[in-house]
Each structure stands twice: as structure tokens, then as C-alpha cells.
Image 1: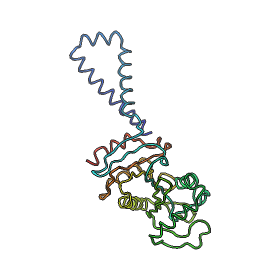
Image 2: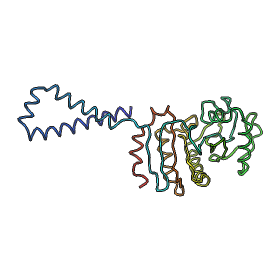
Image 3: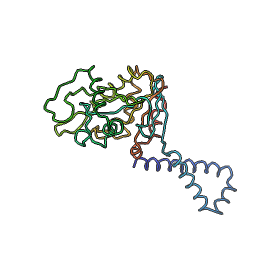
Image 4: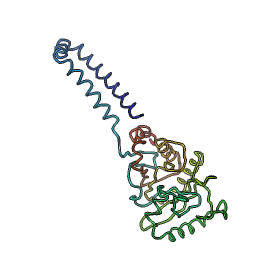
Length: 277
């Protein structure tokens, strides 16, 4: 709907601009202009409308990739693609228990968390479990939930980051969601902000100049009450506002192809064009 409104607005602007231009030409070359219009009035009108349509389509053309300067220290590329094809560091949102059981109850197979486990550790979940357990030893858990029958029992603060590896890929598992009384993984908007701040702080301290690839965090089944366009903008603003963040090789924000109907990168580019200058 928003794109349709943009198309209409730009179409009307084009009609106005072309009409103004023709009025000026008419005033200068009145005799020749009158002759042309009287000869083919429909063709003349058609020319105006076609030109306006082409202009509005060009201005509102969809972009598949943009590059932004979010600060003097961080360049970002935003594009639609496959996160798992990325090299170096890949961020994966997980739940507060860092579970590894993909059963569509604890972890849904349709989530990025579930797809990550199935793709990279489907035949070696013990290795993933051991890596998670070892890396989380540096943190003090919020509690040990002994009533939990399935999954891990150690619960960690939202924003906790656990690093695991698979061949040449490094994954930053960030605790994004917690379980509510209905055993559904959710996160509030305020908690979401906290998670982003903690994640960016961890990236600053541990990425060591390697390329960082981040999905549209919160766009899945987390319960963040923001539309995908706003989620993207909030993520980019968060990176911009992280004063100490230095990424010499930049950061990729990789959006799933299914988000193309909900995200207009042209609008994002306009909004962030001069933010880092």
C-alpha cells in the first residue's frame, strides 16, 4: 500500500513538472506549440502520461542491495540473500537456554535457530552441545531450571552471546527470546533493545576485524512488535549509535528473500544516506 502511494505521489509530481515545463515552452513558442497540440492532442496527452509513469517507476524501483556509511568506523551492506552462505562471522538469534533440540516445540524448524542446527550440526548435535556448554562457562546463569523436562536447564540473561564454530564459519549465538507461561519464545521491545546493545558490544570486543553477517534480528517468531522495515531501521540506528564499534571490514545485514514485500531498501537508503557523515 505504501509503495502504491509513493508511485501515485511521484506520478502526480511528474505530471505537474512536465505541465510546468510545457507551459514555459508554450509561452516562448506559442505558434509552433499550438499547431503541434491541435494536430495530435491525444498523442500529446499520451506523451505526458507515459513520461510521468516512466519517471515514477524509475524513482520507486526496488533495490536488492544498498551500501551505507553508518559511522566513520562502520560501513554496512544491506541486501537480500542466504545468511548461511556468508563467510567468517554469522549471528544467530537463539533462546535463553541455548537449546539444541529441534522438535517444533522447544525449537521450531522454521526459525533461524532451528535451520542453523539442522544445516550445520544435524549429524553432530553433541559437538554443538559441547561447544555451547564450554563457551557458556564464562557466564553465570540466571538460574538452573530443574523443572524443565526437555532442553537445557541453565538459563542465561538476554543478550548473552555464545561463540561456536563449524569448519571455517564462526557463529555468534545471541540469547534473544525467553519462554512465557505458554512455553512460547518471546521478547519485549525494551528487551530487544538490550539484546542489540549487548550483541554489538560483544562484536566490538571479539570480532577482531572479521566480517560480521547479521540477519534481521526479531523478524521471525520472537514477538517483537515492529514491522520489518522498522526493525531494519532500528538495527541500523543501533549500529550507528554504538560509539566504540569499529568494523574495518564492515558489516552485512542479510535479509531473507521473503522480506522483499515488507522492506523497501530505497527508503532505507534515503533515510541513512548521510547519517555517518
